Length: 120
Image (cartoon, rainbow, N blue to C red):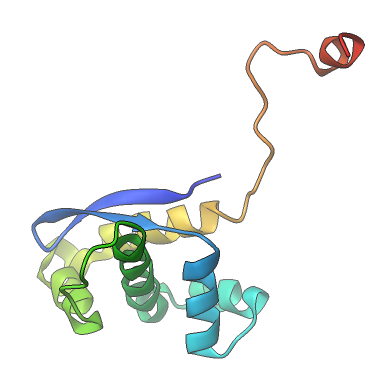
């Protein structure tokens, strides 16, 4: 499961984190449910990526106990100043965000689950 992604935006490497606080903030802000959010992001990433990126970066600053030194419009300006209006950055972010939905249980390589249960 993806929990964070580092992207270069606004001429700086920035850490974007995902988690329950981030998700809760987005759902409350957009006054929507989880499944509808995923649907909307898939249909129109250009509208929702900046919102998600802002909340994600804000979440990272909260975790790191840093003062927030940007506003949502900064995200948009940073994206628009990138080559191709930041489409590649937005898509990297959206792909990582959607990757959080896979939520698969990790399996240790080389571990046979049948053998592991016999050892108990």
